[in-house]
Length: 366
Ligand SMILES: Cc1cc2nc3c(=O)[nH]c(=O)nc-3n(C[C@H](O)[C@H](O)[C@H](O)COP(=O)(O)OP(=O)(O)OC[C@H]3O[C@@H](n4cnc5c(N)ncnc54)[C@H](O)[C@@H]3O)c2cc1C
Image (cartoon, rainbow, N blue to C red; front, side):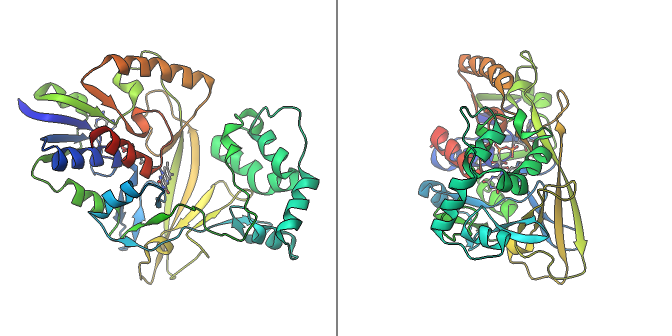
């Protein structure tokens, strides 16, 4: 029987941050069990067979408003000064995204001022008595033309259903900028770990109090470990044997292709709202600044919501009335367990950016 202070399930960014804090700042012994054969969870990156650094579960760009989060990670890595840019491929052109004054100029091929954009929106927005769904949310702010060109088909591809059948919250936070700010994220701290995420995580786990076991489901070895407390970052429904039903996720499949040329795309990520089956393509070299005579592109194909009990690998939680009601039942169960904490995207059934995962781990363990 192995004895540790803390057992952590899952070596994603949440579990790794928790382990690092507990080992270094609380002098606890920690065992992390990870069922995949690598650390890093969905933030894992690695070199492909051509030696190009790729993100195996889709592009991950670090950005945060929280100085404590940035400072914590900066103990373990330097940062590449990368500012994320995205274009949408619309009407045969690469167009600035999120929507800003440049977007209007590129789309309509004439010059716009801030007042012109405001006048356009005032004229085109559709007054609705009630915002019932994700489509209403966009057309009531931007009108049908912008909705049709940028959001309608992208949303259908992303979620597998029409925007009319999705909650308004899904499109609530789509920004429109009345300046020419082309940055995708406006957080004061953003960048890419200098040597990649996996190297950052290795540095965080490099402590005598931390042991990591990969390639093992915690359920297969939990009876062989004695611990005071568990931090569980796996799926909360799985922990309770799906007694209130499974919590649904929308999956993504990734296809990677290497090309014999230095670059293919104008920026790191291009959205394809209206063409092809994929939603977007990432060219990693724009984010990693890697010098290589070849380049690797990642194509994202949203997949049907996960089948019951399938592992929600790279996925977004489907947050609707039914799933949120079921989650609340699980949450109630978690509150009854005094020696288990549930955090992370799967433990909390929430879309969380990486910085929120780090923040939650700092708040729980710091
Ligand atoms: C396509 C995509 C792009 C994204 N891009 C960004 C971005 O640009 N910026 C950003 O900030 N965030 C981004 N995110 C969000 C980011 O991926 C998450 O914030 C982060 O991965 C969550 O980390 P986690 O540790 O909570 O979960 P995970 O990374 O999922 O880690 C949980 C780990 O637990 C393991 N596990 C589960 N069950 C068990 C078990 N029974 N036994 C042992 N191990 C188990 C899993 O294998 C997994 O490795 C993106 C997400 C997606 C889907």
